[in-house]
Length: 296
Image 1 (cartoon, rainbow, N blue to C red):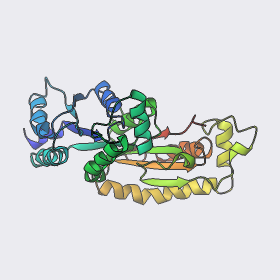
Image 2: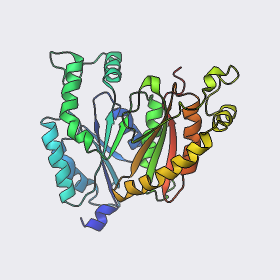
Image 3: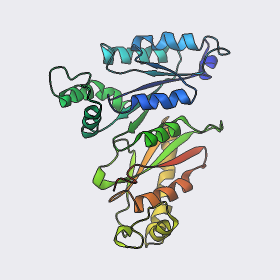
Image 4: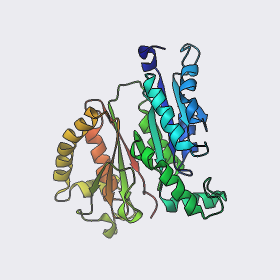
């Protein structure tokens, strides 16, 4: 297959921590028209890519392979498999799903299953072994998604956002504007973090407390506060050279996290406003995800 023919196909490798949501993400990919192969041995990445794209009239143009620690000699084979793909002219994207130890333990306990690397030890022992095995892979992944505070619907939204628009419009850079509450922890996948706790908290206003930053009454209150509009203007100005730099470095996905105390009012309102300012500019597609909305 020539380089031009390869350019018409997409190869995605879905990996990450056990319990971080690979199955849910794989389902989203499959529903979006990808040919998904679960638990593929890393050394089969290149042969499978060639097989599925040998005849573009009869085979899918998008291949997603789920690769994880269920494969033996995982790290060495995975790295070698990616290197072979790149040497043959493919440009695979590595999507890594991660979550905190607490979230992973809670998920394994809820389904009453052991961690695949747990052995005779504790569940946390298995999680730490896996983190060590995947450390370099995580650091070099093209896209990192923290699923710790996401339900299945929020994870679906983030994966769909990563995949891009269904209308076929060209997107050079995809941005996830993620609202969160500091009391629930800073998102692991945040590239940029903004803190909205410098603004008055609508929580202390009895009339506003029941609403969220998605409601007009709260949004208008937050954006009318001294410093709010100035922050929004300067944040956009600051982001412009950063986003241009991400594009020059070959980044295609950026997560901008906007936090307040609980992730209900200020961060939600500002995230919505920031998304409107960024979306559609010079090939940029921005969506908003509210990680902690509804947790209070």
